[in-house]
Every structure is written in structure tokens, then in C-alpha cells.
Length: 268
Image (cartoon, rainbow, N blue to C red; front, side, top):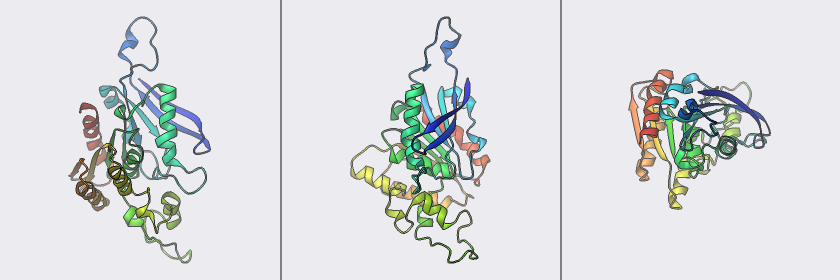
């Protein structure tokens, strides 16, 4: 197996970036003679997205990746919500959905179609997995989303502080941060930053949606937001999996569901 950190210059983010990648061993590696790269054309690729405040260790799933013969790509999305921010060099959505996929295709010969390219994330990364798969359904065939930070309706119409001494209404981040990630908060619910709008556009165009697996703990502070998106998908006639079980917003819950999601992705 190979666990790599890869550095390259991103034209989208306008700076050097790095990501981690895991590739299982090719069974042919023990056979005599040269082995060509990529090792196996049928190898699927899973993009794994971390949550707010940085990468967690939950996605170090080498055993599962080897079991299913899956390449793992683990980008650093910083605290971007994997969206195209309004500032120069903050187009994280385009970086993930276009530039990084193309880099993996051209360099490693992987992720060549939606049928063998999947995406999964937790918390902010759960939002990112859903949004990215819906924004680029021709590139991602399945999306797994755990404890997703589906906060568009929560931050809509948020106002900046009137003076620096005011307390922020949101305990996680301030108005300026959300505006940078999501754009105009007065119109965010009607924008492409809202996964619901992406679903509506795909349905209106008669396009195929990615397969979706969502889960959330019943004691998670994001439970109602996940239930709301589940209801939206159901009311829209979008087939998907939605599961709840006891748990909070932590590694214990994510460690429980990561194998379940990978089984759903790679055994179906």
C-alpha cells in the first residue's frame, strides 16, 4: 500500500496546496515482470472531506480501502465549506469538483467517471460532500454525508455586528466568515450555495442525481438540519438513504458509520 502527501500548484486557489492519498497494493505487484500504473483500471476513488477546524483522523481507513480496493483522496479544505468563496483564491468548490478531480485523473489514471468516483465527509465535510456531488453530478456517482452542517437556512439573513463589543449570535463563526464562504446571506437560500437549489435545478433539467447516504446522531446539535434536508429530498421524490442512531457530533459516531457507508458504496 502507498500513503502519500502530494504537493502541487493550484491554479484555482492560486497557491501551492497539498493533499493526502492512499492507494492499495495491486495484487499483480507480486507477479514477475513490470507492473504498469495505474494498477487497476477498475479501482474506484473516494474523496474524503474533513470537518470545520481541520482534518480529523477518522478518514485514515487504509484497511477498508484495501478491503474494497479503493483509492482514497484526502484534500485540505481549510474552513471553506468546500464552496467558492467571494475572495480571490478561495474557489474551493471549483478546486475540489474540477481541478483536483482532473489532477487525479491525469496524474494517476483514477476517478475517470462518476461511476467510479465517490465522495464522503463529516460535519462541514458532510455538507461539502452533498454540495459537491450535486454541483458536479457528472463527476461523482455517490455521496456519503455524516452529521452534515446543512446550515444555509440557519445563517440566512444573518447581520454583521453593529460594533466590536457585540456578542455574535452564532457560537461557531461570525457574519464575515459566513459571507466569505456562502456569499450574500440575504439571498443565500436561493443561491447555488444551497444544496436544495442544486437538487431543484437537476430535477428541472431531468438530470441524474448522485446516490445519497445520510446519517446523523440523535443527540447531535445538527440533527434538525439533517432531518430537514431528508424531508426536502423525500418531498422532492429523490431516492436516498437516511439513518439516525444514538450519538453526538464526534468520532465515535463517525467511526460507526464510515464502514457502513463504504459497504454501501462498494458492495452495491
